[in-house]
Length: 420
Image (cartoon, rainbow, N blue to C red; front, side, top):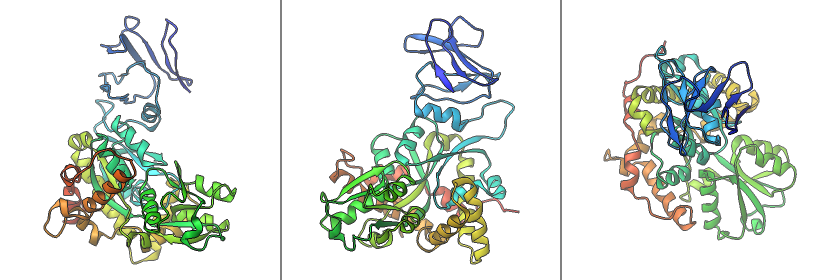
């Protein structure tokens, strides 16, 4: 447990273990210069494993002895993520030469490029950094954590979180497109057509591309405002809610949908059908801009690893595909048989083939503004404005600087190291 107290003696940030990191007032100790926070000055003596902290924009740095100084503030979820999630994207010791990085993955989700990378020693070598993998259940809080420096890479980020994040001043680059939503609206057996949803309760993933697509489909069917849609923060919650009879349906990924079908639901519509109506959810990897500036080789390494992971996912040999899906389960927490099933379903309707990857970053004229990513985001902007999610327009000119296809282009044109 970590706790902060202010009793006039130690103001400790204590870990109840044989090692501890303690925060004490200026003048009480001998560690280097302190930083000013809230009109007081503090020093940190860290005897536990060195860590990097960035609390609400405060400067982060490490002493030559590996002792980290940080301000005395109540620990937020973001800062706890830094402490527990580990070593956010910078070297923590002069003796350490390999950069470190913090990368998200989706808890209990289907296999993805990041889960394949994390469970493949060969692809981890391509990454060229020491990663810490941190599970997430929703993109918006992860983007808030990235803004505070707690994530370097966030994977599987849908349209609305990207657009909303940029509209709210987050600074990141889109560097890889991993998948297009393959999501299903699973409902009770009593619901057989769209109009049966009037007055019913549905759930989806809060602030996600799934939410964008579902509400778009409801609008097309003249059901906007007639169906109660609640955004939940995790992928497993809708399954439990449906089983308990608290909801009438859920718009969820294939893994959760398969479980709800087992519990008595059936599929009313899926994201492939909804995408044809103009509401496609795309899931990208974003990288913190400052990290990309400091460690472009790590960003390139990640994209090269993601391309290699996609090649394994696209393998014509089912045994190769299933081996990587099985390995992915060790990270995501899915049962192995479910990981294989959902991975194979992703090959059919979710993962973006490498042959199409570049077309999302640039149009036929080679310009980012005419690529599929920007086109999708511009439609998302209109949706978010209409629904009051953002309050000022985001233009193509605003989006283009945050879409960086140079890493993908290099990876697709022989710019990655050979794997052995």
